[in-house]
Image 1 (cartoon, rainbow, N blue to C red):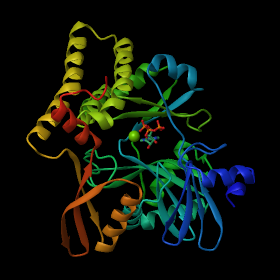
Image 2 (image 1 turned 30 degrees about the horizontal axis):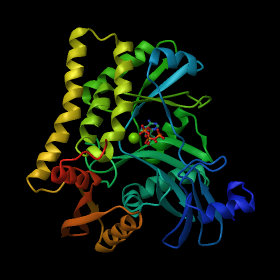
Image 3 (image 1 turned 60 degrees about the horizontal axis):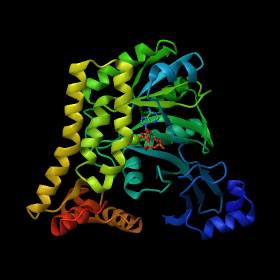
Amino acid sequence: MLAEALGLSVERARRLLEGRASRVLRYHGLTYIVLRRDVGEHYEGTSVVLTRSGAVRVIEGYPHIRRILLLGRAVPRHFIDEVVVEEKMDGHNVRVARIEGEVYAFTRGGYICPYTTARMRRKYGRALERAFEALGEEAVIAGEVVGLENPYTRYYYPEAPEWDYFVFDIFTRGLEPLPVAERRRLAEEAGLRNVPQLGVFLKDDWREILEATRGLEELGREGVVLKDPEYRVEPLKYTTSYTNVHDIELGMRYPFDEGRTFIFPRVLRQIFKAIEEGWDEDRLRAEAERLGAALLEPAIEAVRTLARGEPLAEEFTLTFASMEELEEFTAYSAGMGVPLSVVSIEAGEGYVRARFLKHKKSEEELRKILRTGISPLD
Ligand code: ATP
Ligand code: MG
């Protein structure tokens, strides 16, 4: 069934199933196979779902979006005429599919997350039903889950402080997207939220696009995704200086986890910001100081935290409808190899709130340095 679903030879499908490039999982009576790499035409994060009735559904992995470093070079070359500028919200990517009457939330990696699925059904069950009614069962809705109550990426958004979902793509089948305007109308009519749209620009007016990102810069928001109104060419992303540096700052709280991989790509983005925006001496000084602080301060604070004998771990709170739901999520995380511990539970009328600690590799690495005084790098 895998060979047929993905358009592979039987032999290739067998090797895929046996190897580490795929994983087989179960969720509420569904069996699904996750692709952990690109396979043939299918992106990493693709899920092949075997439904209860024996039908097969392929939920395609969400495509990678290439990044702009110089708007003035990239935008007039890449786009055809008009460019829709949508906000790039910083949370985690979730594709929603309806399978035999129930909606499921797939993570970027292609896993059905029990927590996200449960919250999605509670908040948007009816709206999603309306959307799939209009779109048909083959459709996949893609969007960003943002807010502080998720196990993956937490940024505070005033319009979504805890948990919400903002649609940015609708695929009618496979990876065939609805035009931007149609998608936005359909989502809204169904009662779903769209990512904010900053405007529609002519590709040669890239300076106006740069101008439009200034507001986001001041609000400390991530950036934009630029799209052809009909997806005739692929979308491109562009982030604010604020985010480039702020991500380094957050990442360096855990230098051996996010820290080391975050640095170079973000420094590169800042270098080309300076070129495109023509930073003067004062701006350059200010940015250099901001970047230096982002690199050093959180990491030094992390080492001091450990030296005081305190743990170095990510902390977050999730809200469940019941203890069973909480247990299902912790079992799922353990299965994913993510070490989570529950530090406290508050149960009330129809809800269970749990505080989690997520263990970080940096803790061991930094402790070892404090103990031995020797560098693990060189
Ligand atoms: P990749 O670069 O492979 O897409 P990534 O997670 O590193 O992976 P990001 O830099 O976060 O990528 O940018 C792409 C992601 O941005 C998308 O996968 C999606 O989750 C998110 N996103 C937020 N807002 C939008 C939007 N308006 N349109 C498209 N994607 C958006
Ligand atoms: Mg992201």
